[in-house]
Image (cartoon, rainbow, N blue to C red; front, side, top):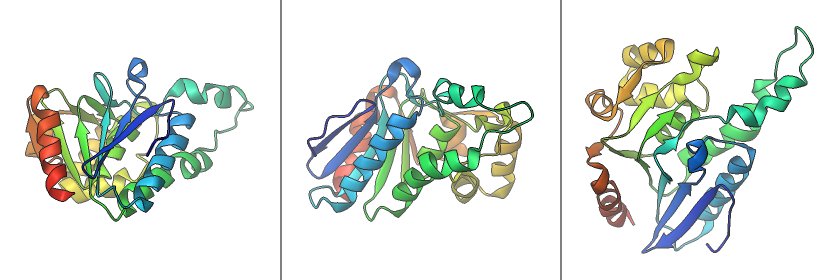
Length: 209
């Protein structure tokens, strides 16, 4: 996979494809270009025989902070008084295809969560098969803080991980969970020191590949 991207980086070694969300100055916030590029990388992963496992992670201090609100600011400006932004179309075009590809990929996907995973960023992690995170990681269903219902499949994938009672509480109140709290809730598989995140993740990935 020799494609060069603007908002992600990719690399394959020993059957493991690493996809790194690469907007560290924006805490890897999701924008339209990232949607296009992440979708392209996942499509390639599905069809390439030399890819047998996928690792999804983030550059810098964050995994993914969710939607880049600046990216949709122009759309807000175009809304007439009393009108609404068509979030349904926004989700169907940008987010839902990514979640569907992560969930439907016939190869295991590991989220290596190196920092904050908020909003849709948390949804991306929940859509993966395994979640390994550093002690610096945190998870937050931030949708309620901007008046939104959780999207990107989170109402299903979070429920599957932690059960209805805990999922409802997290979605209703937008509580921030530390890595250890996420582990105790059954949300993630492993928590390791930051300097052990990469070797731990790739030890698992190599077994799966």
